[in-house]
Length: 315
Image (cartoon, rainbow, N blue to C red; front, top):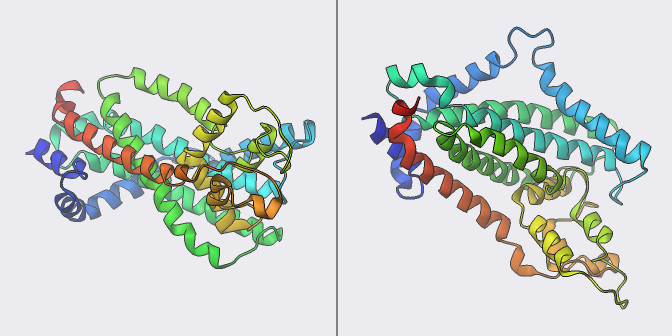
């Protein structure tokens, strides 16, 4: 019976109607678990919720000091500080969401053995708990930008919600995949820590994609010629395929300032008409981040569905 419920909830790609019905039926339990985890995360700590603000703030302060004050490096756009802060807040959500959700099944062994409910709810609740913190931090970033007058609100802000949904689905898909494997293979946690270090530098947290292009000499002045090593192009194209980088780039444009261009302008080469440079001209890369999110969610759901039957035995 429990395995059947897990199959219904995790098999979103195969049977979306059943998945939605199951999720709707357990929505109150999911929300209660998410709120409980959100409250328990900061219990028995002096500062409580303020830790969720201090961690990205400290990362921002260290990064800003090293790259701006010490080495005098910026991304070439105005308001680098607030854009860096937004990138760190987005990255912190993804890192904390996947880390906490990965252990959602393994850390609730007693509950799984004694109580019937779709096991996927534990992963969804853990991800929602991190989402609550992220949304609060995002509001604070917006307020800071308003106070410092480093924001240009426009019609673009309507795209914030779809971008946040894309980011959450990405984190949820990764969480489903990792949590399903972590039950039996705890090595997944150590491997994911290493991959996160690599992913951090390829996700546009510190620099925009335009700045990376300039540093790799892929955006030299129109009319000039310069040899570009092939692996430089592969690196930049791979970064452009990264859904986290695409989300951070587009959130900067939608939420803060139009001076940070849409990813679409950089990838398709349309930015050349505005800045007289020759950036990437690979329009076929434009849908790749969105396809990657859909693929990751599908793989995560199917992996969770396939391994759900053995959770109780492996815990």
